[in-house]
Picture 1 (spheres, helix red, strand yellow):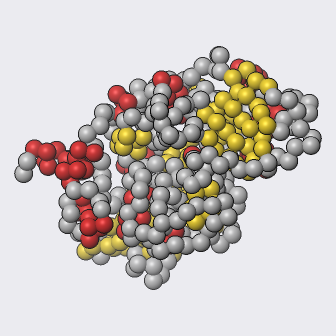
Picture 2 (picture 1 turned 90 degrees about the vertical axis):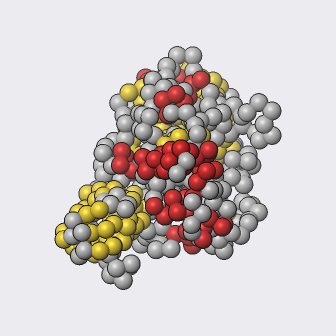
Picture 3 (picture 1 turned 180 degrees about the horizontal axis):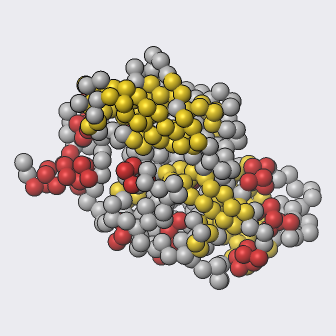
Length: 425
């Protein structure tokens, strides 16, 4: 075995890539013929800097997907150790080249930061960010999740483009800051009475690559949700919000995918129409109707939906995939969540590929936007087993056994029922 191959295999083992993914990377499965990289290519692709060299303060156990934009994932074995995900292991997803303000987990200062309010406001203005600390503060514990989290699992049908996230593009954090509506209420009138405001478009202070053809990053969200839920977060987990996670000010909408929680927010536009920025369309959208895996789609506002509200989902924390367990009673533990509009009512467990299900014990979060912890005991005789989990909410939404029914070319919003393969002995 060559040193390159040995090193790549060790990296795979350390990062807990599933055995079936290793087989695909080696070219031993049918998926490899669908365009997945060889192990040599994989080793080369993973030849990136350690996490702490990309973003100061990050754990070097993080999986670095892209060191130029600072994209990194939390290994599941680390994620499950904390009810609130510490900043040193919380995932990072950026769309543009990582700028100096995003290269540290140190708290960012509000001094000198401003936020412009434009569009259908009574008159345009610039807000000194230090005033945010003087407004009434809201605190929310919530699941922060990349809309591409779980993207690699679409490859069970056809691989999609983009970072091949497994489970670790998420975390549970506590944000604190004033509601955006509180800020607007300090102005009289806050909005133009004659304006038709249906969307709030947020712009971050990060810039696109020099010479890039794409415009700067921005997203539009429904005005009603923004006014009801959004906060201008200036703290995370009891500390000033770090630059790495969008500080000094991040627009946070509980229940929304992470991409809509715009970092380094410095401009908010109140508008009648959804932005036509490339990051709003055709990026960060999914088809309204199912499409055959591998089928391209030309996105329009009519045939697609933005990555706004998180789909119902569950993830098994224990046992880990490919674990060796003792035959007999085995505890299954994990988390489930949705967009927080209604509650998660049940998490179901199956050990016979969905023929039968039983309800796990469920512990609800405070406030409804965090994750629900579930626990169950299953009896496993000696041999190989697959343990499934799926969540159900008050609206009757649940996770499909075949997550590929939501296949889309960019691999957004994976929410297939989760499973782990274990060997009991």
